[in-house]
Length: 361
Image (cartoon, rainbow, N blue to C red; front, side, top):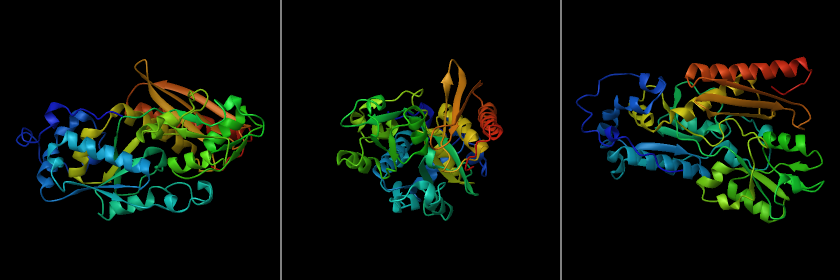
């Protein structure tokens, strides 16, 4: 991903201090952020740089660190004051999901496995902002935190990786596909029921190593992660969204802060990419309406198309035998984005119930 070029009015705080309004309380963090709205409160960031380090919390995996470094570099390019020595610090926090690697996520708690410890650090002041892969973030944020910023979204597609075969269609009957994602497992089995899908956890490098060692015949990963790690050349082929609908919020980075923290909120407002944020609002509303667990294969993708917000979502049984899909379009506004996602999720949940399909909601 290329660095965002900061608008001229954000490259220095000096010309803003006289015009920035005072006060604001917690509204800067909770209001819908827009880049042009970042003027208000930016002086707060500048004035605090000399006295307080802005601490960035992240997991310690190579991909998580790449996302934290990207956030750090965007802050530096947007706010020159943050280039001063000691102005920014990255804090690595080990989460439950990082500690337990030999069990499926659905067996060890599911939601919040990669965020809870980071949220705790944010709330008790050990960090000021938290960088997350948005697909790891539960639909309900902890009280006292807000998530006002999404960076520009990377490619949402999945990739197929194999040393022996060029595509999923080439895999022979009984071939083993390694994936910890129920979403991927269900969509594979829906089209290729003779394949074997096994749990396959670990960071990107670990999974690539396991594949090379022969633990399975193929695996699927998010293209966004490979690109951020400089490993896009490891992809054997890229799957279209028709072949494999992505996870809710796949490819999106979200940055959270505490409610009422004007300094952090002002910095994040300058980084926010509104088109991405609206798409994520839609997708997460879909997920919330389904109230799905980590035992429920769910996929959803919202994006701008022909000036509107287009959405497609699905929910499936883990074996892929029953799959429910829907689409929506609407205007690019927050209310409409949320309404589209909620309506789509409600429809699919009702369809499944009427059909007698039992999901682990």
